[in-house]
Length: 344
Image (cartoon, rainbow, N blue to C red; front, side, top):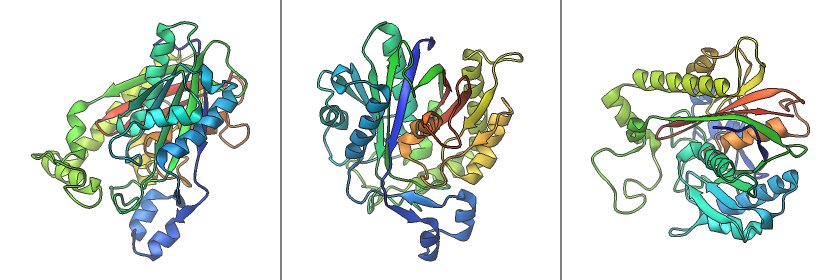
């Protein structure tokens, strides 16, 4: 993908309230071993705002950073992984309307936790196909509220935080505070989709298989049939491949530019150690960074939240002028995206 002229201005909005790991441990919601494997301090929890309402707040931050008016957007791409507050409805259109993007074409993106990667890819393709076209707004938002979702115990090795992210994606001169998109590469392995599906049955209505989403049940069945070790090995190999392809696309080589960091999906210390860390090390010796300590896994939002940290006006992970970083994203299905950005 030719991304030479494409830039993005990212932002996030996280709830001010949070549930602490120490409290979850004391209440018996997690075990000491699970807390050690995650290594996370807290999870942000929305006390009242729905996921799309949070997305609107993140969108306003991204528009402000980009210096773009909502009325000038050509498209709004909204991604999510879990319930958006209504049963039969388009949250993407809500985000567009509430943001003021009345001339934009809204589209919902359902690629699970790689939703931001899928949306960025579509935005970049649209801009490449229409040189001089108006910017695109990408948003993500998830709220993992009970009783439908147990953010602490519904999945193996993943704790889920509430929050929203956004990015204005445009072409041409890079606005102050935005990042230049140097590469974006995506890979998929569709045959792994059954790790998140009740094999042998399709349900007629939501939650027919149980009162709450239980990813542990489907993963356990998948590991029983196919083995956990081959599954993790495939995750490592695909992560290495997608990162290598993105770095090649961005022009990295023996005498090319150096990466300041590789930011990992926010899936916990054990997953970073066993899957993403070794996969990245196969490709580059750049420092690896996990920024999930105070957010947990943000559903479709990890990628843009990590990009927000790189673009931030201050902070330990802010890119300085001329520096490059790579950001990894992964989602059930499975799909992987690697993005390379530069502060110009």
